[in-house]
Amino acid sequence: MDRELILALRGVTCRYPDAPRDSLVGVSLEVRAGEFHAVLGPNGSGKTTLVRAALGLVGPVAGRAEILGRPAGGWSRRELARVVGVLPQREDNLFPQRVRETVSLGRYPHLSLLGGMGAADRAAVERALVACDVTDLADRWLWTLSGGEYQRVRLARALAQEPKLLVLDEPTASLDLRHEMQLFELVRALVDAHGLGALMITHHVNLATRFADQVLILADGRAVARGTPADVLTRETAERVFAWPVSIVPFEGRPQMIPLRQRKEAP
Amino acid sequence: MKYVVLVGAALATLAAALLVGPANLPLADLFGSPIVWQLRLPRAVLAFLVGGALGVAGASLQALVRNPLADPFLLGLSGGAGLGAVAAIALHLPGPWALPLAAFIGAVGAMALVYRLGLMGGAELDPRILLLGGVAVGAFAAAVTTALVSLAEATELRNAFLWLWGGFSGASWTTVLVILAYAPLPLGVLVAAARPLDLLALGEEPAQYLGADVRRLKQGVYLAASLLTAAAVAVAGVIGFVGLVVPHVCRLVWGRLHRTLLPTAFLTGGILLAAADTLARTVAAPRELPVGIVTALLGVPVFAFLLRRWTVS
Image (cartoon, rainbow over all chains, first blue to last red; front, side, top):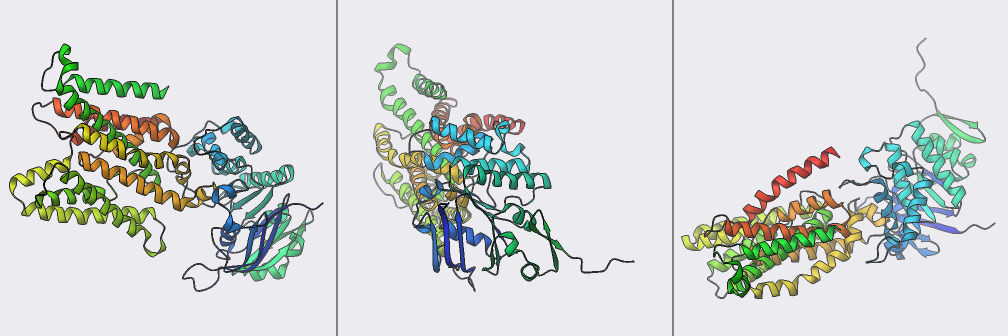
């Protein structure tokens, strides 16, 4: 079955104004419907630039970034928001807000200038709340939520956009184990159940290899490896990229990375 | 429902403004009196419109610079308007419109300067630069104003300061018509920006991911809110507090979404300022208090009460 190609980067090179070097060098990536892609790499390796280039916020100096076959920079923000839902790393909460209001913001790209939320919009919000298991929180204030609940609410907001592609920039940073696992399982379930494409930037190598279909490893703006977790996460690659000795062991058919201790234990 | 209450309150405020005043009119003469038709009514309507404009401008600017302390006059407009007005007085410009026009030009000049600062270095109206630039331009204009005032004669000086503190004693139907012709365009721009402004509260990048064209939004809102404020300052002087506190009151009572916030801020700002002006011209009659003092005296207790509710919920 040929799945719909949603996001395609072809040899994308990006450079910020006044930067001494390229932030991204010749990176290629294809995300299709029903695929979960993880992007790994140390800090400053170009992961966030990759997302910005994919979403047309940074224009490539070479190569092409396309969404549904159209250059990413050629979409209006409103059109793009109906196709791609994004969880940025950071956002502000300037004014107090309830969960359902926050999720409703996801409907904005679908609303006309003066029209209000219609029945279809409210239904989409409810579906998103259910899908992310936050219906019980709908009337709570945002600031009363735990970190994990908050991320699920933000994911629900992205789902309310009814996108074809989800882009998540380090969604599990600072979450504890349970919430981290819940989020990975949720993204996997959304990809499988709704046929969404997902592109997740993460530092969790072992969860990325266990949940994602495809892994891209970036270092210094270059794609060091790209492919299935088993192909990509080898000892050589991991040690080179993360600059630390590791051991790779299989678990349920997926490679898991164990960082090795450098100093011998005292006798 | 909230609009029924607010419009009712607005009508009641305007009616009260017609009934009371230093010229103790008997109720029967009220509708035939030129004092009511030529003085009290245009004055109350103008106060209402200016209060509404300041409420809407304040609400949008707070969302634009993403700072709850923002106020329409924070971005250097009051300084520019004051400088324009004082310059007009110092230069003895003639005619009833010299002062408001000069104030308007001063405010728009300050706005243009701050806007230009906000575009420097490729920054696209960075809120921090707008705030700092506004404070700096305002301080510079205030310094020049003070220099002019210190060189002026005593009566001119008193006029300049009275004007700066604001008031509606010069209100007329002509002023009301000028504002009625002028305000709909910037108000329309801001109302059309209501939904993207909701998104902007999340930050610029998240707003773009939810479909807002942040660049155009910031330009449109900045220009529209500033032009509204410039008109308000030109006809009424610097009236603080309305643009800062009314939006917060409305957010606390009716929620933060701009589709509700902007209309409620307009009505609440109008009610507050029309009521404050009625008090300003009656409590110490025949003298008048500066209306800005009354807005603060009325508004601060209400605001303090609502802040308590904010922390409790």
